[in-house]
Length: 198
Image (cartoon, rainbow, N blue to C red; front, side, top):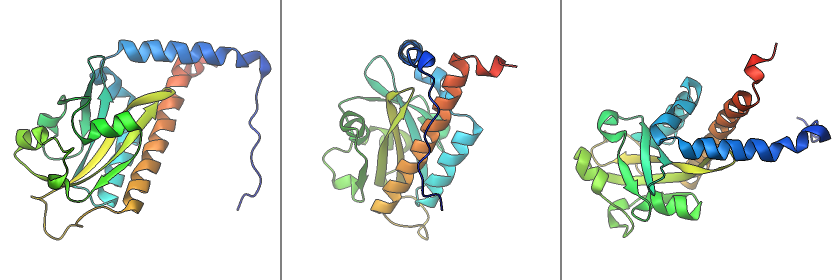
C-alpha cells in the first residue's frame, strides 16, 4: 500500500496558463449544444456507466447535460427506450434531477411515486413507472455540467434488486468522478494540442 502522497510536478512558467485554459473551455462548452457535448463520452466512459448502472441494480441510467435554455437534456440512456429518451428536455426547476443539479448533492429515493418532487413526464412518455432513483451531479471542464441518474422501474423483472442503498449512491458518484477525470483529460489534451506533440 502506498503511504506517501505524491507531490505533483508544477512549472511556475505554466501556472498562468491555467486561467486561460479554464476560460477557453468554459466558452467552448457554453457554445455547444448538449448533443454536441455527448461526443465527450467515449466508449470507455459509456462502458463505465453501463457497468455501474447494472452493478447498483438499476434497470437503466441516463446522463443529462444542461443546455443554454435552462433545461437538462438526456444525451445518453442505457435502456431499451434510449431512442425515445435521448433528447428529452427536463426544465431546470422541475423534478428530482433538477433538484440534484441545483443543490449539487446526490439523491436516493426508494418510493419515488410518493415523492412530491417527482415529475412523471418522462414516465408517461415511455409508458413506464419509476419506482426508485439515484442521481448524482456530473462535473467536467472545471464546472457543473449535468446529472447522472439511475432508475428502477415497476415493470422490471421481479428477480432484480428492489431499491437502492447509500452504498449504491456512493458507487455511482465514484464512477461519475472517474468519468469526469477521463473527460477532463481528453479536453486538456485537445486544448493544449498534446495529441499533436511529437
